Amino acid sequence: MLKDDIEKSLEVLQAGGLILYPTDTIWGIGCDATNPEAVEKVFKLKGRDAGKSLIVLLDSDNKLERYVQEVPALAYDLIEFAEKPLTVIYSGARNLAPNLIHADGSVGIRVAKHDFCQKLIQRFRKPIVSTSANISGEKSPANFAEVSDAIIQGVDYVVEYGQDDNTQNAPSTIMKLEPDGKFVFIRR
Image: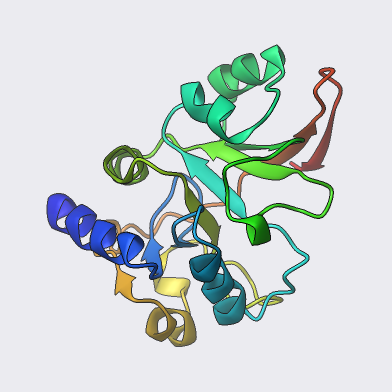
């Protein structure tokens, strides 16, 4: 099942479509983070203001420098030693869909430590968007059973892997990290 889900997800991502998939936090809506048309589809499905940023997932911290102009050395320690999933907001985003980058030039990136996400991103060879699988303003689903029909019907592929896991998952910790190493927590 995992292999089939990855193959089908790859086809959808490469075609500019949306997937509904499990992450190291909550279920997410995903797309190719370098494709502005795909990113726009996410904003429309969620009914989300395009001024609000979306998170990007990578499979490894050694890929950060492809998408961030100057990665503070502290970032690598934070990622390695974080006890729960950590999204870091970096200044100087690059090589991503322009509508994914915040007006101040920043982007939130999480290195996913989840089997499905790791394998999918490795195979896709690009970052993927990860935003909570809910309509903007509604409660984020803690597991697949809480995902609304509107979201399920609005994506191009729903991953089967992990649907039966009823763990009450939570969103990631979010911190903004400046190039000089100063940081502030946005969400704990």
